[in-house]
Length: 291
Image (cartoon, rainbow, N blue to C red; front, side, top):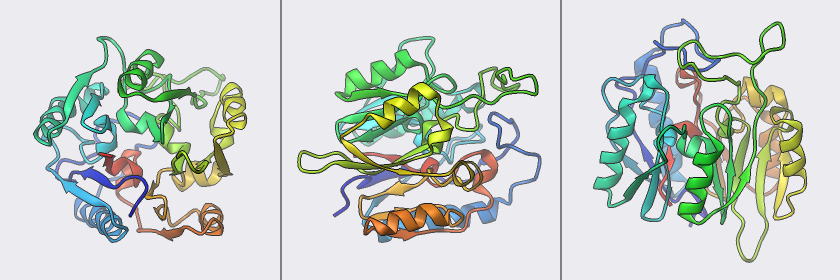
């Protein structure tokens, strides 16, 4: 049986678009929705074949990014902390609350005025929670989520996107500071969770994190670490993967990470993704863990 991601929530590509460029990966090339749907189906099938139970729901109308369910909430057991998303994704919030409530999950909201990107910016590793901040999530929101759900918080920050003068870039669509690692799941992945009997295993891109965060990660002794190059993290979305602790569903364009994972005795499978990435999301983004 999988050790993690035993049950995930996935939606569809019906309303998927790249109309509002709310992260640095958006571009003007049109999305082939039929192909994006096939890519999502391939991810769903690979997860199912790995023993994951996939709960399928419709995406909400009026949201270009409703396919990226990982950003809907952070779920632990029968409780979820609902995300607070950029304006282009606002319709996802009430929709996610409805979907999760119908699944028997109690939904709570972060305090007013705080940003929170759900599982995209908060990755559970046993009783630990790797958290991002500064772009799509506020540290106070991460503290609320971790405290409410009973996690020990590991607060990190990725590097900002900078303009030609070296100043942080503010996204023109969202009005928020931007980063090529705007959610932590683009820079770090949980391969195996920490348990009472074994250390966890993470993969992360050292260069994607600030110096302070690099030091925090280096000093963690409850996890083993696989380093991912900036090229594979940025260009191949290598860290944006789903792991059951036995099988990894990940990018087909990250051979170095694949080899490192296989050296740990893990099975690696890779769908071909060309359309889902046009919204700045990838494999991990399309599923919300319901463990």
